[in-house]
Amino acid sequence: MHWTEPSDRLLLGLDGALWQAALHTGVIDDNDHLLHDPRRKRARSKDLVEARFGLSISGTYRRFLRDGVFDPKGQRARHGRDEPEHRAYALLAGVGVLGWLAHYSDRAPLEALATALNALVERQVEESRSTAD
Image (cartoon, rainbow, N blue to C red; front, side, top):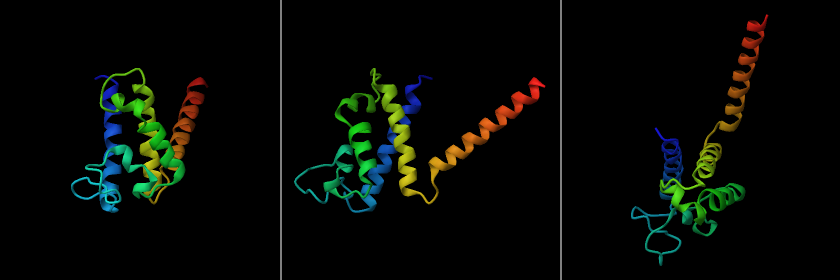
């Protein structure tokens, strides 16, 4: 399996989460039309992260999504073309998914991830000490 396959799924998951949130919060209708800009025929992913269209996300996270994950330069990478920037956009998508979970969940996923990673490192240190003795 090529490494881009999992990254494509991350990007699709983040994109899908944005569309679902936009639909459920009245930013778009069932036909993907922006309700706050009826002149536009159909919304685009990058429209969903614009403050003027109404999706409720923090300014810092909004800028990260708009200028990092959904910027125009990454269009080809986001659509599965193996561009030189694809790895960078895969990492941005992963961080975007964690940010999405942190924004919409009751638990702090980044703290849970840090706790799990710390426990893993502690176990590995203990195992390496026991094998060294």
